[in-house]
Length: 106
Image: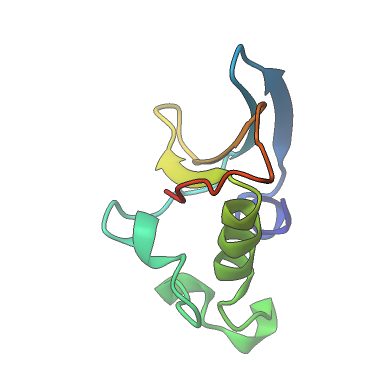
């Protein structure tokens, strides 16, 4: 949500209960990011070119940490550019996560 507000100006957050999972979407109206960088931004210390100014803060760890935490709980995190502009972060957690059964991380 912090990135959505920082780079998109605001965040629209929604939580959906699906039959087999819980989905959280975080949308912003910002410029989005290039297709090549949609997965690169999850790499530790990776920062988008237009966010390299020290005035914007951050060192490129936020999304890597978020992805690690979400995966540790059996979830998935994906980013996509929205057709109407801006970026969507989609977080999906399984509803039936059994702590005794190892889950595959995506």
